[in-house]
Length: 180
Image 1 (tube, rainbow, N blue to C red):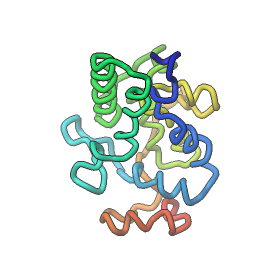
Image 2: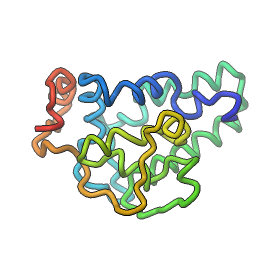
Image 3: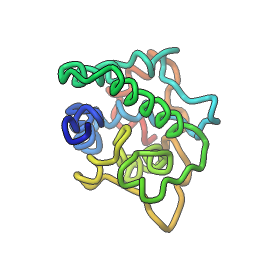
């Protein structure tokens, strides 16, 4: 399916746009910082959600992931298999499991790669944008997995980053909030 519809497999045009624009456009980078605001990797059963109780399940990005499949007439079985992989991979990406995928890190965006996306340092966290696959990061040079070290602290430099819903929704309009 990846060859037929690579955009839908890894998030499509919006993900590609954020891959290229997030590190370069302050307002977008500040908005992306909300998802990286946690300062620790959660235990497996306490996966960080979003500002709302069912944020992850009802997030517009998650809902629009099904549209390309529907337009292509993909069978329910293929769609189910995709979302099972999507859910399991997302669970492991945000759990505190030291799961190393070895050579699969050139295909799958697993926990080892995704942890770098949550590094407190912008030059490290502005990498590994792939949601399930790391293909776009390989194409655009944003895949990051140094062999000589592990990721240090997670989260943002600003330890008083807003945690409330209303304040987080205002953060993209406060330049540099993720760096204070």
